[in-house]
Image (tube, rainbow, N blue to C red; front, side, top):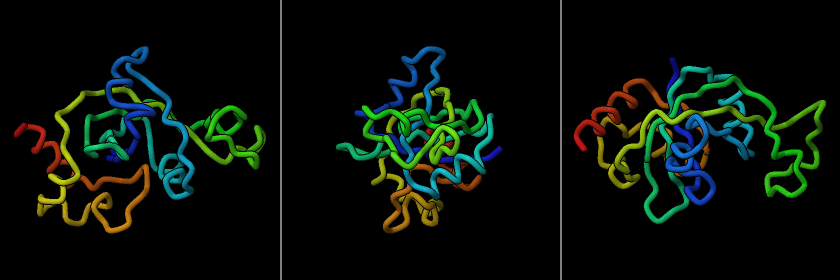
Amino acid sequence: MAYWLMKSEPDEVSIDDVLAAPQQTVAWFGVRNYQARNFMRDGMRPGDLALFYHSSCAEPGIAGIVEICSGAYPDASQFDPASHYVDPKATQEQPRWISVDVRAVRKTALLSLKQLRTIPALAGMRLLAKGSRLSVMPVEPHEWRTIEALFGQQ
C-alpha cells in the first residue's frame, strides 16, 4: 500500500462533499500538473490511502482520509468546453489528464499546515518543502504513521 496527500480547495470539493456523495465516493478531477498526474497514473492503486488536504482557504490543513478506489481513467473535464479545466489539446483518442475515484474513510479534526510545520518528524515531508505546490504527492510511511498518531491525540 502507498500513501498520498491530495489537495482540494474546499469550495470545489471538501471532505464533507465526499462524505455526502453517493457511496461517499467522488472523482478526483482537474489535476493539471504533469508530475501530479503521473503520481496518479503511475503510482496510485486501489486500496492506497490519502490524506485529504483543504488548500487555498482560511486555514489549510488535513481534513480527512480517503481511499483510492479506482484505477486511473481519462478526466472528463478536459473535454468539457463549459469547464474551467477544459484542455483544447486533449482528445478522446489521446487524453492528457486523468482522474481516480476516492472514497471517504473518515473526516478528522483539521490538522493545520501551521501545526504540521511544528512536528520534527515531518520536517522532510514534501508538503512542507519551500515552494511545494503539487496537488497530489506521495507521503512516506513514517510520515503517515506520525500523522495518524496526531489524529489519535485530537
